[in-house]
Amino acid sequence: MDRNKRKSKEFKKNLTAYGFMTPWFIGFICFTAFPVIFMIYVSLTNRKLNGVSQFVGFANYKNILASSTFRNSFKVTIFFTIVMMIVTTIWALLMAFLLNYKQKLNGIFQFCYFIPSVIPSVALAYAFRTIFGKDAGLFNALLSGITGSNVQVNWLYNEHTVYPVLFFITLFTYNTGQMMLVFRSGLNDVPVALYEAADIDGAGFWTKFTKITLPMISPVILFNTVTGSISALNGSFALLYPLTGDTGDPNKMTQVLSLLIYNEAFSNYKVGYGCALSVILFLLACVFGAVLFGLSKKYVYYEN
Amino acid sequence: MYKQSGTAKKVLITIIKIIVAVIMFSPIIWIISGGFKTLTEFTTTTSIIPENPTTDAYSYIFKYSNFFKYFRNTVLLILGTGVGTLLSSSLVAYPLARMDFPGKNVFFALIIATMMVPGIALIVPQYIMFGKLGWLDTLLPMIVPAFFAYPYNVFLFRQFFRSIPKELDEAAIVDGCTPVGVFFKVLAPLSKPTYATIAILSSVFWWNELTQPVFYINSDKWRTLTIALMTSFMYIKGNAFVINWPTIMAASTLMIIPPMLLYLFGSGYLVEGIKTSGLKG
Image (cartoon, rainbow over all chains, first blue to last red; front, side, top):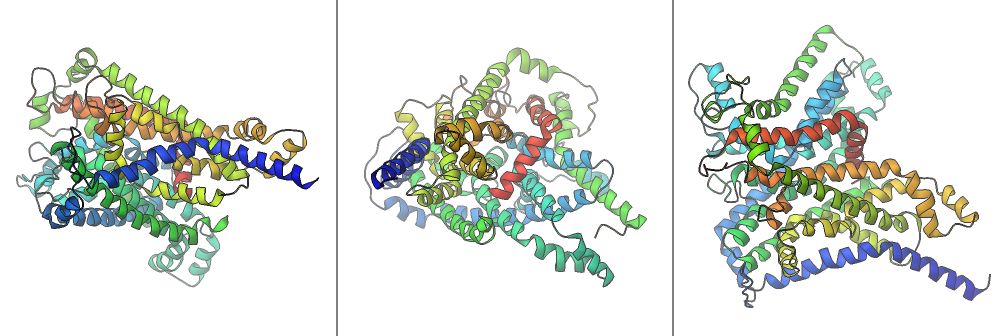
């Protein structure tokens, strides 16, 4: 084949590839790249929800850094993301362990464990608002029955109880269900021979768990926890908005950044300020993303 | 580890299993039972089995609310985003899985990078953008982007395409098939289960999605079921100050049924799909 012909064939092939890629090129430019640039621009203005806008330089950022509401929200976001990641991972691992213990009726158990993660988070949020409510709440009734006294705690509006209850509720999110399924297959992939060898050496359950199971599934755990943190950043809105509102009750203790963005842009009409907050959330996600990319390169894309 | 099985251990594990099942399933029982209570019973007692079961909440939903409109809107949203993402994401994934061309690695890295960006971080600028286009208060801000390839689904399609033996493409090319033909005649037909899996994952996502409708939809016209739960079903006509819990619970029950049926009858696609997307994504 002569050179020109090969070149033109190569060119045609590349053209086909770019042709197939076109939807993504357009999507990336219109729905990612442009919004990012536009967001940075709007964050430098005092744009209101009605579109009135004036260039103000870095004033929004200065206000953000001086704002105690922001500092609180930033802390809450990091705290919520990390604790949710830990709690849901442990719970998912526990459920995977239980389900991998082969028994009759395992199908029913998996159904019960898994279904909460594929139903609307807003329905769950309302269920829990009433379960942990003060009057006629299921949890108060349960505690009253056990202790014999009349328990009247408003769990989600009490500063001392809101976090434990909130993290309990995160056990019912999509992410937990997904991790449970992933851990189930991860646990199945651990060679049985390793356990048999440990049995011969007389190792107990805990030794086997820490010396064999955990090291064998550590890449899966690591990968899942970091993916989980990204979806916690993203998904917390759909859970917390119907649960504790955009003001993050009680006393802003649950006001993660996404709720603060909604609150500033749509309740206070400060879109420019909301964009500056979005830039910060974006950068935070970039940090998490960089960590994930580093880890996944090491563990997941390895096979390719 | 599971080999030696003392009866005591077996009983203990079964008990823990049942406790976890009760914990995980209790909100669902609570929702279903709440839908059959009167408002007074719901706000004063905690019985799981309603003392005076009533279907008033359901009658209200079906007779006096716009339930069927919200249902139609949600279905339209699922169909629009589903068709869009299946078409565009599979097209984009094909060259990434099968061809070599300049810039491929850069594009792929960008796709991975955008997967990490939480949508919520870009929603305010997108809100302004869609406002300028006049798309607010319609389903367009959610459906149109689906036609331009979600990075996450592109990634999933790419992984699935790569698991199909390359020899099949080569054989087709020898038989005179063009690269375009390879996609439509070889890869796409072989990937039917993949299309079904991604369609199901996407449907579950949009059935449950609250965040984007909350930002983009204001009026009753294009309300989805998830926002209706926070608005129309929450405050019923003639009583705008008291939260009407039984209606919320009844509507929630109706919204739980489709995912449950999907699990019972399409659990292969649902469970396997979520597992694979977790392993690979």
